[in-house]
Length: 321
Picture (cartoon, rainbow, N blue to C red):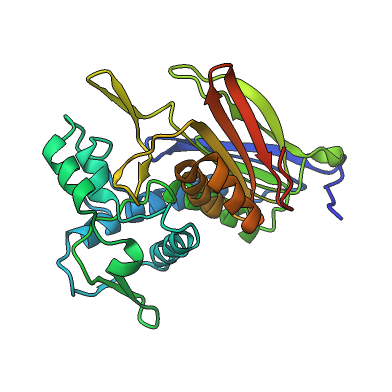
């Protein structure tokens, strides 16, 4: 049974800052927070560390250093990065390759990665005709020594999982301090535990998939766990009258092209919610909802049709509405 702190004995704290080209936030209730300044520093340090390890936009990140290595060369990686890579591969295998972090070249060819520029038609066509190896096939792990090497030349892109892990790291900072009632987020991805004083649950807005504006379509109550959304309305490319979403279909080596405007996923961690939101976006409503039921995920699909938006909800015990 979920319990909440006594409203007469707790205070509300709110921390926020810049990270990953956007902002993070941590809202919590606690009877006493020792040294607020130190906690703010720890939260900032946690997300900064994730960015330094996993960013595709920082040439000095651990990930980019690994991307630059030739196949066969071992590299010792921080434990957090090692865990994210391993988790990404597991989600990739479970999703029938709908999620795959070995899409760095593909993302670059479609001008969605650094540096931005015109889409490279010849490179796109070459990748479509002969897609590169999956991350599962390309990476070899030595967990005993914390090392990874590439079997094949590949460029990894963690944009579909790193932000979710960053949210989990914020949560870990609070958990380490014994804080049990919190909501942390980075740019619309969340991790929650406990609730507000008086037994009120945490509520978060589900964004309407509208280009150029941010409006709430509705709200969702969160229990303990993570929430992430993948959509086609924020980052896209228009070329010769055609709009291409930034989410790649690794199986076809092309941008996703289906009627899914967005998918929001509830999972035990925000890292898993982040990765699975991308996978379900790629799979589409029919296969995606079936896979959500298979793995016990709660998911909200927002689908475009001639009449506007249609909602498809799959809850964690397999019900569909």
